[in-house]
Length: 194
Image (cartoon, rainbow, N blue to C red; front, side, top):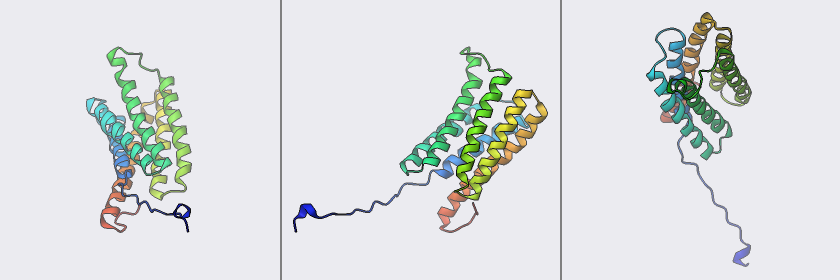
């Protein structure tokens, strides 16, 4: 038999780390801190903006790139998109203060938040094929965007406070799912059901 007619097979094993704990933790912790503000515990300040840029923003974009490397289209789309959401939100808040644009009005912000809510609702449909924990994260995030859009559009502080508490819960669930995945991997068994 001629060597050129032989077919060889090579098995490639993925040895890269799971980026989801990083992405979910970055999303969750940043969401919690922003929503402490929305719930009225402290003002919007540099701590929230820095968290939005560096952890909620850059860390999620990196997690999205790592998900791409693993061939996970859902993870790539979700983490990269929400990382860029945090960066765009920081830009919306910072650019007017730097004299680089007008602060968006209530209708514009409501539209921005509603678009993210619609995007999140579609991703929620994708989670129906994934874990229960991710389903709860995306369901509560969809609700959060709806509440924030209504609060901005109606200039309603009560709705903003409600959104703040709901956002704290959404962020806490995301942190739980992310760290649960991490602990389950470290222990090689289910320590935290996700």
